[in-house]
Length: 151
Image (tube, rainbow, N blue to C red):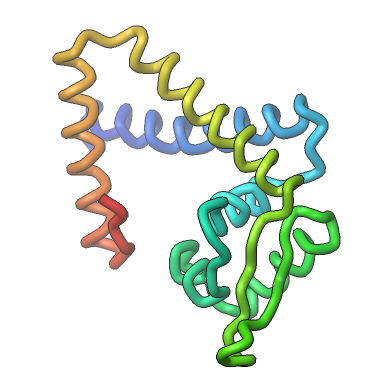
């Protein structure tokens, strides 16, 4: 394998690992009892409006059973509420509690700080190159692994 491909592989693997580790440490440092998976579930539920379980499961690319288990844990910890709609009792909605909204705000701030610390060291041209490179990378993974694209 070419040296540049080895370097790229190492960079991508280490970057993914480091981001998750840093994110997990930030949660612990703020006294949170959430796991990375739970905070990402909170993020997917969002704070704009109640969402259906199927919408959240689709966004997270997980099964309804997996989401139900995650939601049960978040309900028990006081971050999420679950309710059925009046119009159709089969439709289950989830929404964040005030505690869940606080956790989402903390998580959003972590991501904003991370992006700011990266972009503060780049020129406008470097930032544009990084954005275009990451878009290509996401496009590749989206096509190769049939992932949904958010952009």
